[in-house]
Length: 175
Image 1: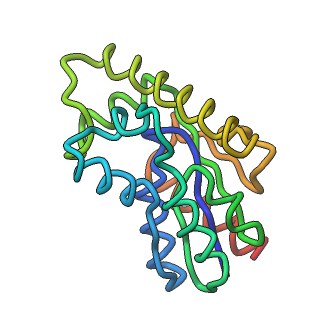
Image 2: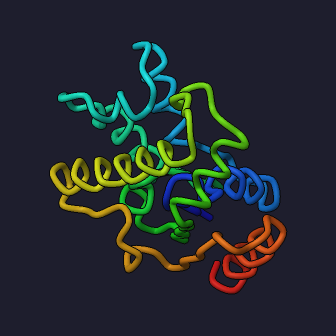
């Protein structure tokens, strides 16, 4: 079994991917964590790293291509659905306002320190647009195009337990 999880920042991708890895006994890979580590090595936030005028994607994308040869994995990443075409493709989305609240509640070291929710909402929008433009340029793929996925779930108004119920139900019915 291969499962990929994509979606918008703050939608719960990491939490759900880790939960599914445990539930289905799968090896978990986070492309975002790999990119955050690469950014951290340069002393940058993930947004700063993504805005660099150089190809920061090739190494990570080649890693994903290698993962496509494995079974019993879950890969969380914007383009994982593309690099693992035989996977069950899950997309989680959330409104930027709800995402900002979630991210401020549980910040990552590699994220910018935000003075306000408003600043974070703006950064989320910038990050999404940067991702979209970068991946359209590199692969002619919009990572936020929902038709690329088998299952789309808006987590904005759902509890974590509701998401933890709905996603596995879909996987069991379609895996």
